[in-house]
Image (cartoon, rainbow, N blue to C red; front, side, top):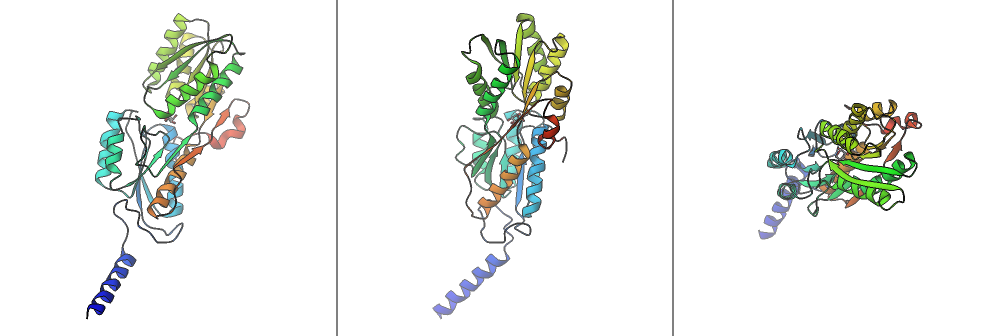
Length: 327
Ligand code: T6T
């Protein structure tokens, strides 16, 4: 009798596993086929800023991979790069317990608690930015931002003939990516004979503030030779600051990122070089890592994506890496 009971229970368990839709939680249901026709996992991608072409392009890569794997990705994000605005979005998404959350945390410390709470029911993948303690994440995918900053510094030194005053227009302290770019830039320029490093100023991801920083610096240092603008909006604002100050051509700009506005500024000679990341690749690999985690497959804790230096001369060959305003 006891034996029949055990057989019956086993049968029920097998049927239950076979019929489950694996819709809930981030518990990582196993089984199911690879590629298309996979489980209908639900994922959410939370950007640093929703309207930023870097994250829009990341979402395009995520959507393409999602289609291939047969999962869905919902795209969300705050209107400004601000931890106070991103936190309630994380909380609201976490309350729905999607299978996975891909997130670019806007602050290395402030987002730790909300993301840790979300990890109770969803697999976490950190895309682009990271946290001081990223241990709750199954994977982190980002450009090598220190190396990106070094490359920006070397490119700017080349453009100014290796001497003169240089500065960084950055976003705000506490963002992993842009902090690392600033560090890399400093490594490349500090202590170089003939180079005077004026340090970093912060624009809060606001192009108008970046433009004010540039005009104020030029009023104090009319012999400024070069600017490293550490992200999309910093580059946009730095270029308009130069235009306002009538210093076009006298000051060189290297900008991180390659949105449509930055590319136009490059074509117009306001900016001399852009460091283009591969956001679509970050989004695509993010979805793949989340999927692997949910399927109980091996994940890669840290993935580095590369970047390209774009100038007017190679712009035609670089069309594929330019960021998109929509998918
Ligand atoms: O540079 C990207 C991103 O890598 C960074 O973390 C924040 O700024 C951007 O989104 C561009 O605006």
